[in-house]
Image (cartoon, rainbow, N blue to C red):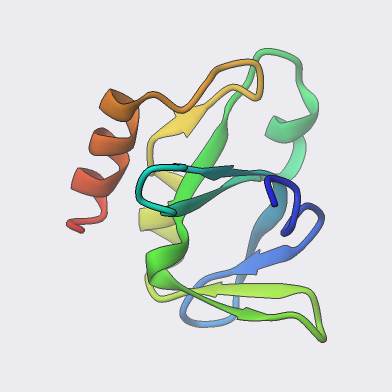
Length: 102
């Protein structure tokens, strides 16, 4: 399940492309899902992070392999980031949920 959205395109509420899902994080206790979205060249440079987006604010179109977030590009691009080598800790999950006011 952790790779279920890998490769999906992520767009904002206006349909503007944000990036591509790098990985999916799942909180096993709550079943909350988050996608890590690499943006442009930043996702190709080692050591850079991916924006973390809770699936709570997203709609998925499996046919087109697209995830539409219910917020705008600036909010998504300024969201908390996480390196793919880092784990999603409960503390970090709290920061992400706080950023999106969930």
